Each structure stands twice: as structure tokens, then as C-alpha cells.
Image (tube, rainbow, N blue to C red; front, side, top):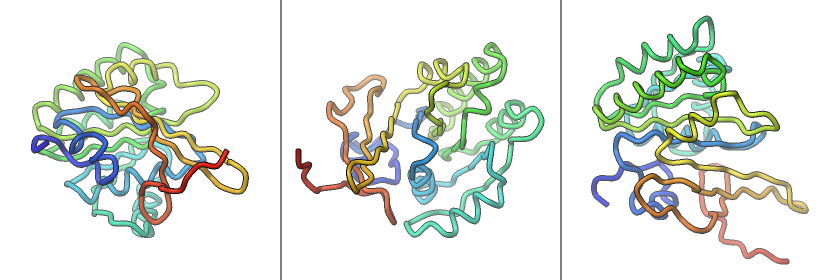
Length: 208
């Protein structure tokens, strides 16, 4: 579809009928010990991107993007993980230009703020993305205990990507589920991926 925005990963774009509608918020939920950052790095090659990091330093993110073997862009990277991370992130969101990507890696830090303030942040983020026709990707870590406002993030997200990574025999298996795609029917099956130099489909057959 002509009005969709590319995710930077061609296999996902095909599964999603061309990509994601402009103005959407996407939650990418993944294990901390996975290659999920490849999705974020490849997204920077598609459009101008603002990359907000909450745990790693801005220099660490820049170095990782420079080392990434796949096709990446040259995003603006800012560290918002210091004092008042939600307020700092909010200021950057207000200045986001038309049609740009916003990447928050990881959103967990923002989710630990007071619920009413986080809810306001999400609503203002959604309004700004709709007004600018951009795409926001919130990278969230999965674990035994979710951040206290993860439920708000899941509810407000227009699209949820759930990456499952597990060791199966001698291989590491990655499967991507899309349990939520607001307004349209999401893919009914998971997508088996290879997360190497780039994010690609794993076409090998499963053997029981």
C-alpha cells in the first residue's frame, strides 16, 4: 500500500501489506539477550531518525550503529537516561520534524515513571506522530517482571512486534509474532527470522 511506511525490513513490509501506517506507535518487545537492536538500526536507513537511548550512552549507540554490518542510516542519537528521563524525552519528541522516525531504546526506563505522567506522555506522543506522519518505535525488554506501565504501552501501541528468541538444539531460533495491528488483520503465523548481518527470513524447514 502506497500510504504505508517501511520498517526497513523487507520481509516485514511484505507481511504487513507494505509497512506501517504513518503516525503509528510500535512496541518491539524482545529478550534483552537477543539481536532485536538490528530492527532499530535498519529502521534508521529508511528515514531521518531520532534515537533516544535510556541505558547505553549515546556514544555506545553510535559505535554500535557504525559497526552494524547491515544497511543503516545516520540518526541523531541522544542520551535521555539521566535525571527526569521522561521530561527529557518529551522535549525531544516535541521537536521531532515531519515524517521522521522516533526510536526509544529502551522504553522500560520511561515506563517506571508515575502512571498518570507516563499516560500523558504516550497520548502526546501519539498526537505528535499523527500530526507529523512519522513512526515511533518503542523497544521494550521482556522479563519475569514487566515495568509497571508496560500495559499502557501495549494498549497505546498501534502495532506490537513480539520477538521470541530461544536455543533449540545447536541453533538459536528467532520468531517474530505480530499479535496486534490496530485497524487491520495482523499476520496469523509467526515469522521465522535470521538475525545476522541483516534481518532476513529463515527459509530452513523445521524438523520435528
